[in-house]
Length: 418
Image 1 (tube, rainbow, N blue to C red):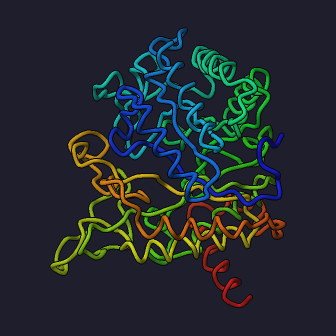
Image 2 (image 1 turned 90 degrees about the vertical axis):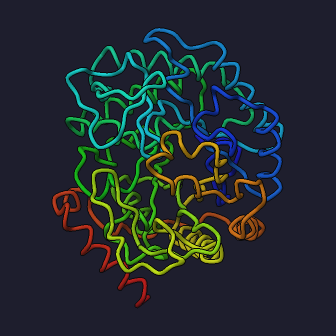
Image 3 (image 1 turned 90 degrees about the horizontal axis):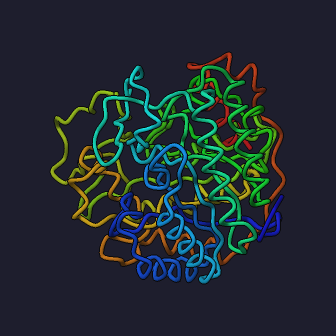
């Protein structure tokens, strides 16, 4: 089901955390700041806001949903609707910016946290989440949450679609593709029954870079459309931080494997601090060794990044390619650079680059990338037909992990030749 936008409209939007509170939004809920931000987002001509329900906040125990959190959710939906925008709430969040934020009751003492820190109840935990794809206890808790939130948003005019989770495979990988498909189907059914609105889920580049027991053809089967996240600074096969073909390549892989249209729900890059340049082409992922720090220029940033001018050019170029290659739309990551007072808190204490992805600076002023998105929005593009598949799913996953580099090289050669 498509709701609120004609399927022909190429969607442009933003991922949202407030600049003053970031991932602490629900504990420090400031409706005035949210309303101001929504008005500014609308003023740029963007149409959709993806935001995130912190699982730990909304579900303090396995069989309850916090009433104050639900009231804040309703206020958030109201602010989005009052601004003339549409909403994509993301449930079971879950993984965010290099940390797994989880309810303590969902953790498994036999499972170490892995490469991402777990934070539960405001404290670091040594444990990871239980098997939320297949453990009936955790599945029932997720269905309860989905039905409770879904019922609160039933018939809400601003609700565009639900997102089942942000890069959910970073919480835990499913044991089998069938487990992932069952999880997707059960939660999609729960949301359809309660709110009668489309469902998708936040798959990301790493789901395509190696076999994580996720098959787009089965996990996306009940969804109205598939999604994808991708960043050249996080992609090992990228040709560099300015590579504008990484995102459309990942999108076309998802189109090919899922058989679905794809909304690219996260794309962007970190911005270099003023007066600095990027010393690197990649940001190391958690668990990877740090990049060498010798022989850097005196004006080097401490992480891979784009200058503000590079970011504006990158944004227009990459979204233009997403449109040309049959994407449903693009949602930029993210709204704001976060306030400096948050720098000592997770996730920023170990990932300073996460402070600098916004289209507004931490003083609230717009960066040039905001004008690039505004320019794209003013063109009012329509969705184009998706091109033919570039891979077959079975052969593609059999080729991993090395195959993606060869596929990308061939892809870029075809784009250059075409």
